[in-house]
Image (cartoon, rainbow, N blue to C red):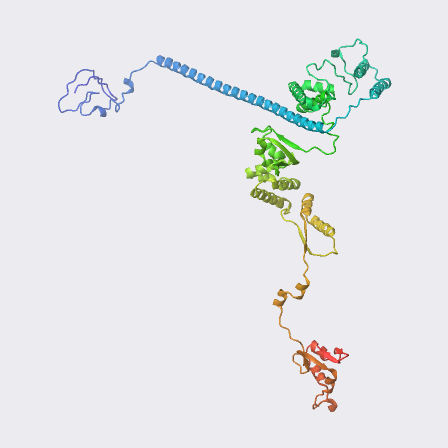
Length: 572
């Protein structure tokens, strides 16, 4: 066996130089250390197949450090790139969400604007329809001209106010002069043009509410057509609609500060932007085209209330909101009276529906319904119910009756009643019942007041007491009739056989009972007995009287027998 590159193992005495070695046949020789009697796998110099450390190839430390630094720098760059990519992805995601939120808000604003325009258009169409019908039936009245005395009186009041006022500032007089100028301009008179200070240099006055006059050039962008009060109202329906829509779009595009300034100048109270815009459009439309309901108000009978649906599948305020808010209102559809919450398909088909009854659910009831809904979805909220007072519990108990399913109503009422019974000790599910026989002597009001006092003594909480008094029921029971008193099957079934007291006596009888004359009893004397005083006999009745045991028998045999004067007959 030839060892090409032997290596001295652990514990080797000397290094065996590489070179050919001749092994004797039949002898096992290790090719690592060159010794015999063991294989290379068992050589102690090889370390069980692992080269010894002292004979391993030594790598210079400088090269290793340089390579390690390069690897560290490479991995550091990779980590930085990965972090930068993650941060960039997070920023892009946030930017995308921000854009989506902005788009959603813009869409909501557009949807709200479209909804407002649709409501305004529907309202104008309804008003124009009513006015057209009224104009076709009612003869238009001649227009009454305003008396000039009104304007003269206003001017006189303004001048007297200026004369009596203690505030003699130039600003107040300038404003008053403008007001007088405006009034006289409406009368057709013009004052001479005087030099006035520009509006931008106008100073604030000490008055709480300065007099403001609308300048002709302040609202140049607003188109106000001339009034057409003497013309047919139905002829200008399209023009009125276009004017109102254009005015609404122009005012909606303005910002809140500018709208507030316009409202202050025109004397419109500022509340919210939508309400201010609606009020401004209504006022300008009325100023331009006159009052649309002047002829309608002259009629004695009120107009029928109708609901106009243009049809479609997308609801402006969502069908869920409409159903919860006005779902209990009643409308007539094809001759049948139905609630609005049951007529979704008919409304989506479109048409004109007559309203019989309008019922708007208050927001407080909606809030309580949401509380009960959350109580059904999350049963742990029952602990919040025990913290409420009696008034809130009663309100929730009565709101539970508005749910559609019977099992839901029962479940909610039982939970609320248990909470009231635990906290206040009163069961509100039981109805106080007073049963009395029918009588005309005692009045119903007196009975109810007495029962209410008794309930008030038992229940201390005022709201629970009022609720139980309201649920109290007075029940009159039927008195027994004459037939029931004379013959009662129950009385007969429990009765026992009774015998008359004259059953065991020997006197003459008639129809089963004793019937005899007193004379016959006196004449019948018993034979004398031994030991009797004087030997005189005694009547049989006396002997029977002495031998009677019960009080009834003694009364029967006493001298006070009931006697019939005509026949002198003793009756029992």
